Length: 221
Image (cartoon, rainbow, N blue to C red; front, side):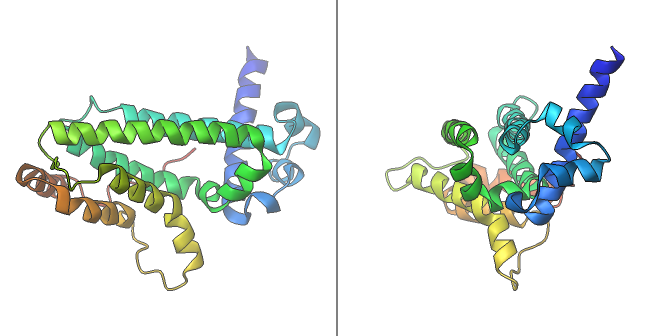
C-alpha cells in the first residue's frame, strides 16, 4: 500500500511541477530532465511515470478536462441557470490562469502531439454542446430572449474565442488594461447583456450584489 501511495503522490507532484514550469517558460522550453531536477528525482524516476512529454501533457490535459467538466455539469448546486453560468465563467477565468500555458501554446501542442489534438477536438465539441444546453436553460427559464434576430450560435462562438485568447491578449499586449480578476467574466456578460430579458437583468443585478467578479482565487493543483 505504501508504494502505491508513493507512486500516486509522485505522479501528482510531477504534474504540479510541470504545470508550473510550462506556465513559466512555455511547453517547448521545458524538458523532462528539468522537471526531474526541480523535483529532486532522477530522470529515470520521472520517465517511469511519463515516458514522453506527450504522455505528461496528456495526463495534465485529462486533469484539466475533468476539472472543467465538473463545473459545466454541476448546475444542481445553484438556484438557477444564471447563477450556474456566472460561476462557470468565474471558474473558466481561474482555469485560464491556472493552466495558462495551454492556451498560450495550444497551436504548438495540437500540432506536435496527435493524441492530445484528438482529445482536444472531442472536448471542444463537447463544450460547444454543453454551452448550448446552458443557453437553452437560460432561455427556458426566461432570462434570455428568444427571437429570430438572436444568433445564439454566433454569440456562443464569440464567447469561446474570448475564453481561448484572453490569456494571449494579456501576454502580447503590454498595455493590456483588463488584468484584474473577473475582467474576462465582465467582458462576456457585457456581450450577453443586450439579449437578457427584464427578468434576466434583474437576476444579473442580484448576482452581482451577491457574488463579485473577484469571487475566485487561484486554487492549488
